[in-house]
Amino acid sequence: MTAREVYLDNSATTKMDPRVLEAMLPYWSENYGNPNSLHRRGREARSAVDAARASVAALINAEPADIIFTGAGSEADNLAVKGAAWALKAKGKGNHIITSAIEHHAILDSVKWLGRMGFEYTILPVDSKGMVSPEALEAAIRPDTVLVTILFANNEVGTIEPIKALGEVCRRHGVMFHTDAVQAAGHINIDVKELPVDMLTMAAHKMYGPKGIGALYVRRGVKLIPTLHGGGQEFGLRSGTENVAEIVGFGKAAEIAKARLEAGEDKKLAALRDYFIEGVLSSVPESYLTGATGEERLPFHTSFTVKYIEGEGMLLLLDAAGIAASSGSACTSGSLEPSYVLLALGLDHATAHGSLRMTMSHDTTKEDIDYVLEKLPQIVEKLRAMSPFYNKK
Ligand SMILES: *Cc1c(COP(=O)(O)O)cnc(C)c1O
Image 1 (tube, rainbow, N blue to C red):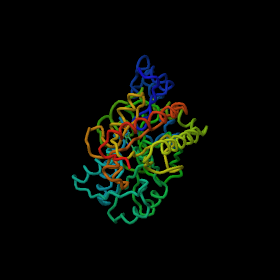
Image 2 (image 1 turned 60 degrees about the vertical axis):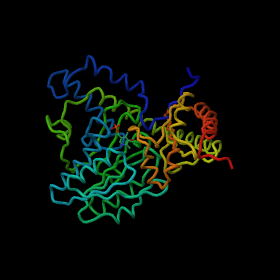
Image 3 (image 1 turned 60 degrees about the horizontal axis):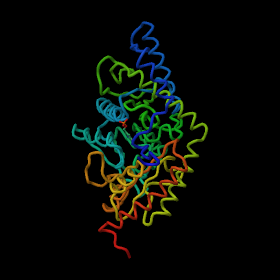
Image 4 (image 1 turned 30 degrees about the vertical axis):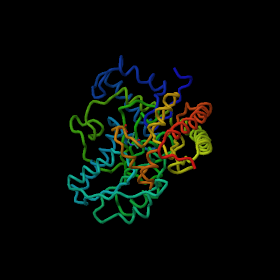
């Protein structure tokens, strides 16, 4: 048994807030109605779904009718990209899509699949901080471009994209704009009345809610072709009886996130983040931050590369010390290819292999960080002593 457990993999998933679980429980037992039924049990479920839809909408200042619940963030991404691409192609608007090199696979693989279905696409590069340039986007737009999809904030390096400027480019050219905001929603302020976005993806489990429930914000007037056909739930865009308990959990998580943002807790977390980053960079020789800093970085996110060692080695020794972190160097697939995100930022393969991501939650304390800052330098030293790449100068 280890003395301390420090969970620093909140970009992968967060621990559900106990208040979320409490809100969900009745909808798995006594409140079992189908929201599409007209009797009392059904109406009770319908009003719970409606209330949750209003809470999720309020988090991004949207209208409740603009929120479509889906079975995951990935599903919302698929619905946005495929739904808009097919709908616009059917109207004869064109068949060209633009995305970035550092999207989540739910976007990249959807776009590439559309490529095999007869669409064309452009993948925009990013700079060394992981930023997509609005000028590069503007230059890539063609007369037949129908959709641009650029993520709000990247999961591996925490960089927040210039969504407003990117959206303005799309508006100027009359091109639909989607953003995958799974890492950003609930963590930074998002206001769809101010941002020129047409669609925006969220997922509850990245913001202290349950896994297996996502949402797509769809601005009024945007027409999509559904990816799931059937009973016509979710305004005809996502058939299947509503997952009432999970939707209720998402609603509660959104409500808590909104209260936290209003209380400025994101700023407190950002201060702890900067203390953490400074601590790692000053105690681990030849360690480098990946991604952006300050306001251009997610408040809970830190990511580094540590020269001359492999990410996996660090993860295993950190885990033995009770610290849960992650590395972009080997994906869930177990592949030994370095992270495509880090390569897109311009890192060489060897450096990308030494990546370490440590993402905090609102439960993370300064004591937790100090514990990591005590263990990490020892772990790095130990691994370097065994590394064939590390010759002491
Ligand atoms: C986690 C994540 C997703 C996928 O969400 P799921 O609910 O796990 O399917 C999509 N995009 C980004 C940026 C993510 O971090």
